[in-house]
Image 1 (cartoon, rainbow, N blue to C red):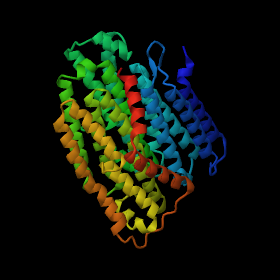
Image 2 (cartoon, one colour):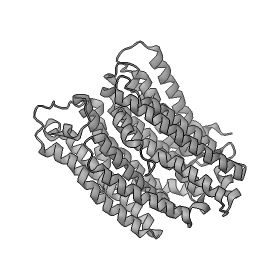
Image 3 (cartoon, rainbow, N blue to C red):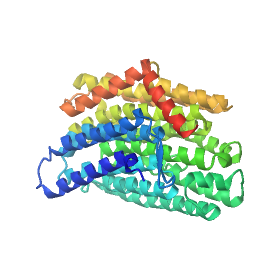
Image 4 (cartoon, one colour):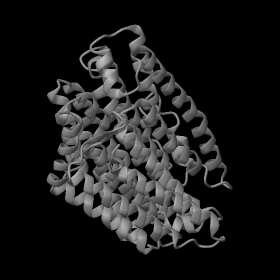
Length: 477
């Protein structure tokens, strides 16, 4: 057993435990030292992971139960980047919490650790352990504002619905084990071959339902709006970007390696295409009437899950590359928008779209970042979101799903309407009597990074595209 393959996970686990211990031991106070320590731990883990990606490390642990390849490393870098941006953007927000500030950062790290395990899992039980590590951390993070009724309600709802979806997924895994005698994904594929039976279809449906909840595909999206609205704003951002990407990381490996012959080219592929189409249409249409920014972004994230799933439907290297590329740029665009929302919540204690009134005068830089982030999510050139959607739609068109690409294009244009409603509020509403928005150093840095990356990748996507291609090739040879 080559434990060096697990170096990123071991490093992050040690950092998370140390952060948790320090948070429990030091007396109540500002906990300002926790932020630099958390950032240092994340950067160290990113360095180890980046080293593995650059060296094109490819190996298995415990006879295929765990993979260390560029596909897993790419997603690990994504999760760590999301965690780093969340920590930076939430510095001022966390300082206002009445208690348990240190534990907040530890839970962010434990959630990232669970995501990393999901990305590298070559075994369904290992995948489930990673999923629960992530999800349990989010149960606590969502309900972190103990004196806020909405946060407590959101945490309870997420706990109940998350437990149900996990039970369905675990039952599906038990069916797979009963049919094949193994939970190792590669062995499941060789055991099933091209056979299809009612029992196999049932197992496949349960696995899909379990993951569809995590990535909020319709009709398994019902949890997202309430949980996004009730959770602390930085946690909402983390849920929207990293948790969704983790679900896709695991689902893509399971479908393309374990159930490739059962999913693609048959009726399950058609069912998945219908789910994707409905998700893109309903997600965008339900976002239009929303008055709460976080609820609007919840429905937007549902639609974004539909776009990402297009790459999964393509089922080839181009599709996987598109999923990887879009998932990464989605982190920066979404974090830019939610960082501004966090600043608004700090200053005004609300997350309604009307609270963004006059932001262009109160904080021109924050308004500019919000504008760029929302236009990127809508897929407007020359921003990164346009390139990402181009890759996704091209991949699915090459597989013959032209109608699905048309739906995605039309719904992207629909999304411009509700994104621009926020822009209209920022630039055209007076916002008289509303406070100025103060930008701390960490928040300003986060806004700057998200804006520059979104602009740079839109103009010059080659470096990220090459990384995505390398990662896709390590999954599909």
